[in-house]
Length: 193
Image (cartoon, rainbow, N blue to C red):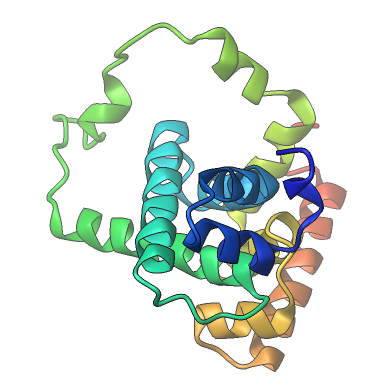
């Protein structure tokens, strides 16, 4: 497996297609942080992000095994597009599912505390990470999405434009206005620093 880490994504895919399952493991380990983080920042739920992340790689495996993978040398953007589409599908399903509200109009799942917070959850709420996430949450959805895809998934603006179905100029504009808004929030101290 150590020598597999030196191979390109495309070489690993070819090895996996030829039956070397360790090649897929190497590919997953190489890109898991970027893909998981971008999913988590879009859905804002650790467990849901883990489920979607698993679904992404199930689709990747099915597509590669079925011989339908054609994105020569662009594995990460392709996997990110799958992740993005699965997140969009999740939110579409949510819109069709009616929310259960309490008498004071709160979502029932926000009121019910199912379990005590674990050590891993506490670690995820480190101070600086939490501040950035809260500021990102205050941005308009289009700006937040472009910033996440650019800075956390490390996609190019062309890849972001393709993924979000907008022009490159629109993606650049969303990034610019998102960063301007984040700077304003920091200066105005809207978030408790």
